[in-house]
View (cartoon, rainbow, N blue to C red):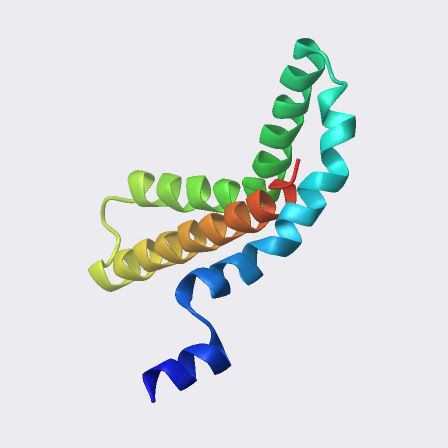
Length: 110
């Protein structure tokens, strides 16, 4: 029974290979153009990637800093309100993480 399922569904390694094959194909397409780049061009490309990630999460980072500033400047704030603000910060940080992962997946082949 187990061997039948393996034949039908494939093994873990076969599933992994199927999952990474599209990325590998993109890498194969991009590789010749990247191979021609000089070290300085590669460094500038890396800086571009960093800027792309920073731009993607900049809005959330700004909101987080505003919320933190509000928390620091109002020491008499109600505990429930503080809890809601900290929850917003957590949500924004999670969203920033997801955005970062999305951009990283987008630029992965390069």
